[in-house]
Length: 282
Image 1 (tube, rainbow, N blue to C red):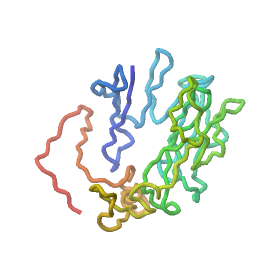
Image 2 (image 1 turned 30 degrees about the vertical axis):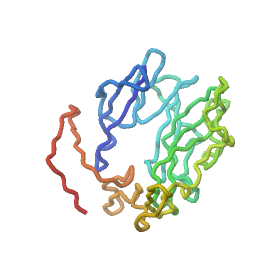
Image 3 (image 1 turned 180 degrees about the vertical axis):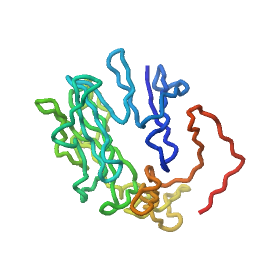
Image 4 (image 1 turned 180 degrees about the horizontal axis):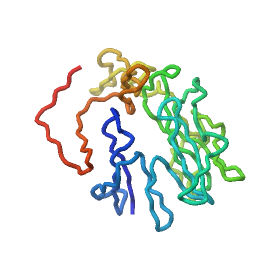
């Protein structure tokens, strides 16, 4: 049985950390998936914890079991103070002890690194017995500037101390790391020309982007041609979408700028909202 838990974050203008959480299930990952089952509206980014036949819902953490119960927490918000911290306990219900060495990974005190906002991680073990941390980063255009590509996914190898704490090589996000080992059954999902390293590359290599410049192109057969003027790509960043009142954030620009219309049933009953028309003005 496959389980999928989601948080319906419909607004960042307040109360977004307490979002309706739902569970869907399917016999196959290809579906069909069940109708969503409401769970609760306390916290977001929930994960199901499986401990044999016992399953529990935990908020704001991703966890797994070794000799200890571990909690990975996303601390410091989603901005430049973001970090992955670890706590552990001998029992599921705690009490939990924080890692005395500090964050597992963060760029908080290194503003000149190319990857920033490192946090919100999950641990995974490869079939060959290696551990990796999958986590989120962003790539600012300037120091603590707008991140045109939004939130990217990064990877870091993890080792374990003799007393059972996870460690990344430097505690800092890296552009390039040794790639995970091939599958133990002899198959390897990576391309034949893979050089043994996984890296996030250069955003200038992406079609249409050149630093903070955004250009559209079209192709009718003979090849790609430029279309229209060069635009400011920083308007697509989370930072551009933030609305401030003094030094305080009034609306959190979390997933970039977009235009849309939505209705949020705060009762959790899934009641519909019908509109005859909508008008958007700048």
